[in-house]
Length: 224
Ligand code: 6PG
Image 1 (cartoon, rainbow, N blue to C red):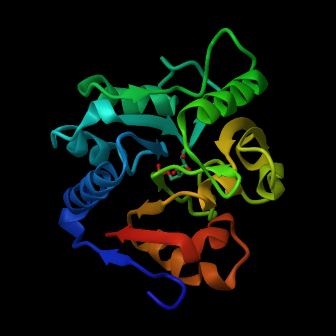
Image 2: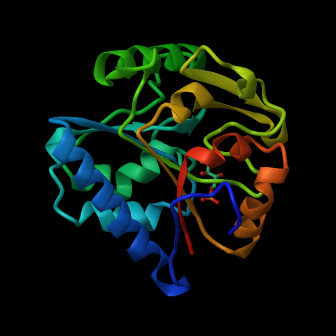
């Protein structure tokens, strides 16, 4: 890895999930030593699920943690595409932490985004005018998207809202996502990526204008 990527943690191929889970658990413990209650925002996708499952068995002070989602598909929680549903299966259902879904089925998806901002306002401490999550866990796609901030999508340029409904042409769908101001304001921003193609893309990201490029200087990386 070249410049712009501080705090790079390389894990050996066969230990990526275990070492990532241990590092994330350590980050959570350190945050719990600093604050009576902490807020952690998790991304969906497939890479982090086995890591979340491992963390769920690590006996952390779950009752002092508020879990949020970084982004969500516009589907009900029981859908196989639901980030909240998939993370609940491997983590939330196994621990006694508060965990807040982005999608409320009785609301429109626009209202879900507004409601989530209200919830964040209530639960997450503020710093520099924006909510400050203790830990935010991100993934990245091979198009350089992170959260549901996809190339060419309108949410990329939103500098005021915290959570928005983002039409994603490349996916022919809408997503609910946290915006850059929120992600950039996190105490710890962790990117979990797996595999050579994503590693190569990340190495070049500082030369490219990708969504992930905006967060490089802030990232603490755990790669395999
Ligand atoms: C989502 C995620 C998204 C994910 C990347 C990588 O809703 O899919 O939040 O940003 O982190 O798409 O996904 P994989 O880990 O499945 O490659």
